[in-house]
Amino acid sequence: MLKSLLSDDLPKSRWLALLLVAILIGLAVAPFLFPGAKSLNVAARICVFIVLAASFDLLLGYTGIVSFAHTMFFGIGAYGVAIALTRMGPGWDAVAVGVGAGLVLAIALAVLIGLFSLRLRTIFFAMITLAVASAFAILASQLSDLTGGEDGLNYRLPVALRPSFKLFEGFNGRLLDYYIVFFVSLALLLGMLRIVNSPFGSVLMAIRENPFRAEAIGYRTVVYRTLASCIAAAAAALAGALLALWSAQASPDTTLSFDIMVDILLMVVIGGMGTMYGAVVGAVLLVLAQNYLQALLGDRWLLWLGLAFILCVYFFPTGIVGRLRRR
Amino acid sequence: MLETDSLTIRFGGHAAVDGVSCAFKPGTLTSIVGPNGAGKTTYFNLISGQLPATSGTVRLNGQDITALAAPRRTRLGLGRAFQLTNLFPNLSALENVRLAVQVKSGKALDLFSRASTHRELTDRAREHLAAVSLSDRADTVAATLPHGDQRKLEVAILLALEPDIFMFDEPTAGMSIDDVPTVLDIIAAIKKRGDKTILLVEHKMDVVRSLSDRIVVLHQGKLVADGLPAEVINSDIVREAYLGGAADG
Image 1 (cartoon, rainbow over the protein chains, first blue to last red):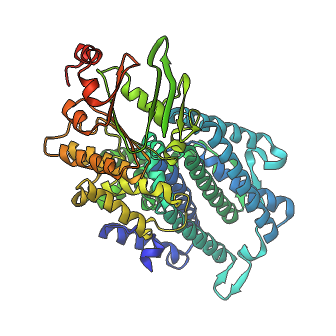
Image 2: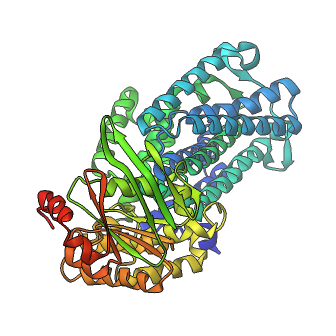
Image 3: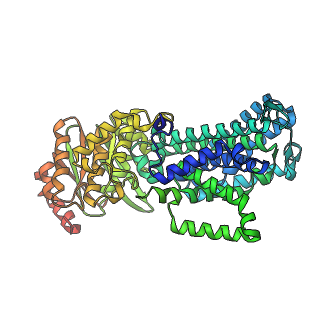
């Protein structure tokens, strides 16, 4: 049962297993264990970023594709929900339309970028994704009628997700919202874990290891790479939609900025590339650090965070999960 | 049947393979010999699709495959082992072979089942590993295998593709004396089945003489001799071509 749920990809390290169980339980009971608006917000962001980092790892760690357009797909998902809720009013129909439109646009863009440029060498592909993502971010801030420009959009969530809504005593709309984010994120993570351990996933790793030989034994790499890009884009868009559904606002800073791109890159590298669990550990560490390190270390917290990253990458080149799995 | 017709590739002004026309029948083993730089590996690259031909055609069972990409040619039955070891370095030996088995299974686009549940693929991969006597190395990461074992794994991947045309590019190069018979026995066993076409690039003349039904000689990109081993090896043109440039024969 557990083996099937984890797609045979067991943690293979007692400490990693303990860490993952602690994260799972921590997030599952976060609203009761750590009451308060800020900690609930941090827990929800952790869930969202786990999905975002894991989907990026599917590209970078499993397929060997270096893309800087991942936040673009995240932003598309967020803006899809935000725009639909702004235009159509706070209803579940608007959420469905927003999520659907975001997914379609994200996948269509991923196919286009993939077919046009995945034949290129890694570095040129990375440059193209950077250009497309920058263009998209500028577009989002210029089309202010649709996107609210630099200020972004603030909108009302469906009634059932508002604090004033009571499902039953002690369980309000925010909690319902949190558990939607939690369970959808968990399902997406397990889904991606299944994909990387499927026959398809084994081809992705073959392409990462030796694209030339993967072609020579009969795999058309551009097909597999494009498909991997589409899956990652769809997962990122869903992560964006979850964030929009949680925070009731979408702006270029919170969904499209290059800072977020750097964050998810760090999450994947620190956690351990090519392992879904690495993305989980990396996302938890980074979101926690961003939210609590300032209180602990004062104004120079970014300096200490930077130093910690350098040491981390220096001493654990395979990431935290890579280190824990080493016997 | 595999045929090449006036097959040519030019790099700038230099024709690395120059108008080579040759047909390879099922059930025969043809050795392609010639000094270093004669164009043997380039000729292989043109047949298996790693390089695009400048002119001329490659036909497989009457179908023109000159314009097809390498993956299509492999799925049509062209199998190739590489001269320089060309594996998936951080995957296990078993996974290297399993990936080759998986190509024809039609399972490669299956996103939602666990790869480990497809027992038949793993079992077939184990059989091919056993054929090159690497069973006890199944879980070893390819990059950490000794050189000789990597060469054998290369052959196991080719076997796993179950092709109609087997192309071996110096399969025993750099192998220890003990490992060479394993590979030669495999080639002999494929030949014995009688329905497979085998192309072999090899420098060791004793190997060529004992295995080949036919020898084709390339020299400076051109086909200069073609015939039975006994005839070709002793012909003047081969002596001149070979002894002119072969120090490692």
